[in-house]
Length: 341
Image (cartoon, rainbow, N blue to C red; front, side):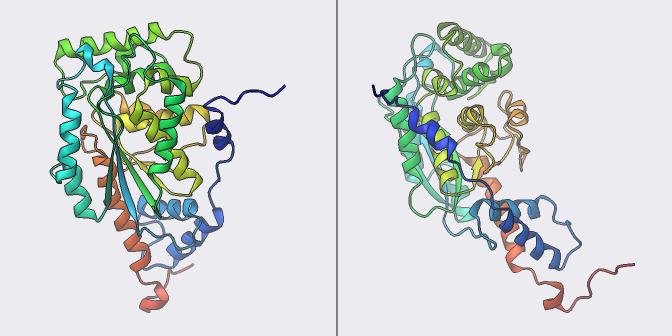
């Protein structure tokens, strides 16, 4: 008797097939760094970052020719509970702003030569209110995860992840509460800038969601579909697809890391190809990064979303790559090497 395949089975199968880093490529980068005209290790994390890129691209000479910021946008029924300072219609308005080139992420991408793609995930059909029902049906969640996997196709060699969606910091807080426990208030911040009453409504919504789905949240993929939303599922898919294609990923802030945390809960190595672009001013992002084992590149007090922190971190990575490829070696510069006593 055959066993019927479940919608999430293919995701679990891919997790089991994730490729690892190339230590040979990492060591090739370290060998070149040792020959460059600088004291050993003097560029600190810039050197580590280039070695990381080499290891995950499996290339002794890493390259960034087609970097992409992918922003996934979704709407959420939980916004009806007054958890945001803005109505859900703002998600659509911001999508139009991205298209017109008027958002912060447009300017950052232009400054650093980043490609930008923005994905409308059925904005006119919000995910269901998590305080009353699962956000998504299982097949819908699996299909959205698969959409996220396909979204990065096209010879991308570095991926920056971003999101847009009114109410999605509440969604992220609910995911963290389910994965990590504690009190709902531990994971709730002010998001778009809610006042004290708005924050209280947000905490109450996370508590209500936890109560409604009690006993159903032991599987991270069930957490994704019950408490997440379309952008969460799509971003998780994009992260896994990047791993399968050996594409390094820069994670943005609080909401992006909720999608990442789901994969991390499935497999503790699932985010080894990811860098935390920054630590957000939102909620408990610093604690989330600690749990994910990620040391952020930047701490600028950002809480915008849109992939802005990830894109800014790309600027550092671009500089790191320029140093690695453009600096002369001691031999090329005819500079005497280190004195050994």
